[in-house]
Image 1 (cartoon, helix red, strand yellow):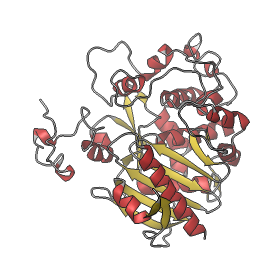
Image 2 (cartoon, one colour; image 1 turned 90 degrees about the horizontal axis):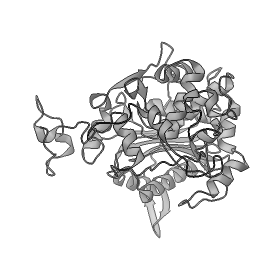
Image 3 (cartoon, one colour; image 1 turned 45 degrees about the vertical axis):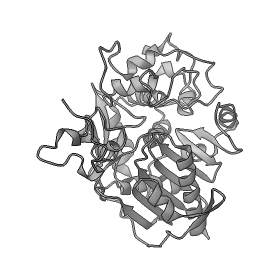
Image 4 (cartoon, one colour; image 1 turned 180 degrees about the vertical axis):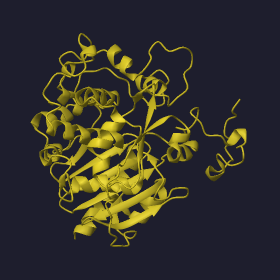
Amino acid sequence: MIAGIDPDVAVSDLMQGLPPAPDRIVGVHNWSTSPHLRWGFLHTREVVPTARIERGGGPVLELAAAPRDLDAVEFAWAGGRATVAEMLDTTFTDGFLVLHGGRVVTERYGPGMTPSTTHLLQSVSKSIAGTVAGVLVGRGLVDPDAPVTRYVDELAGTSFEGATVRDVLDMRTGTAYDETYDSPASDVYLTEVLAGWRPAVGPLALANVYEQLAALRNAREHGLVFDYRSILTELLGWIMERASGMRYPELVSEALWSRIGAEQDADITIRHGVTLPDGGVCATLRDMARFALLQLRDGRVGEEQVVPSEWLRDTRRGDQAALDAYARAEGLDAHPGQMYRNQWWVLERDVAYSALGIHGQMVYVNLPADVACVKLSTWPAPLDEGLETYCLTALAAIADALAG
């Protein structure tokens, strides 16, 4: 039997020993809770099965360095002033990298993480899926306006009847799905059990996440309201597998990872042949910087157009339907120009957009400033609106300082 972690055991002592003592083991039973998650996010392939997303045999895209000290950059916060250094020190930072003009101005790592260490991206993985979708749209393999059932006929007659791929991309289906991360009764908790992220308690009536998709019901009409539900990215992955005829890890490798000059293979969690595109990708800090640079360079890497520029422009600009759906969302303080588009959070239309994942994963892209920031973290709680706003405010301040 694996004992619980002694609260007095330091994070650096976890998984130490040959073998580790029972109270120092990190496994599927505890890897998503603090303090175990830091070790788990840096060693995901040791906790759950993963498939490789291969970088291929092409050249590595070298990231030139142009160091600048950003620690003293200030921004308004909580009625006073805060600095980037304070933000990084107080937000459980594992890795942080800033690009300006395509060059690395800041790169730093927390204990246990190195340039070759992959880190679980959580829902930043969704924005990778949305980018791959753009490649398939550009190839004519996926039509955003087509019904979901054109690609996945198993969903005919289910709650997804009448939903379009665009509804899935922008999370506007009417699907009822409880995204309460710490509730064993929630739908997302079951998704994580089916994905192998959590141990099952008792027998399961469903074999995989695809069966869970087919069993869901609707809460409202498709297409009208933005509602963030991770399982819709699983559906997007399924659509792309069917449209391309490739398994998701091979598809991401062929369409994206082997073409951005990645330095390392990435991983994605997998169980019974089904991957988790919504949150299961693991990648290095530098390779995520290359992914961010792809956004800044309008989908180009050198002379190759990897992602159609029209797709990235659509991601940043969206349309009135996306703006309206976001404005109708419950519990969101939506501002003009904000929306969710192609699996990205658009913070300011045509200016800044971000990939966001629980426990503090971020890719921030600011187009006018030619700045991208990648922050990998292990916040103790899955969601912390205060920390998220604090970090994004700091990243915007960095963009303003570098642009100035």
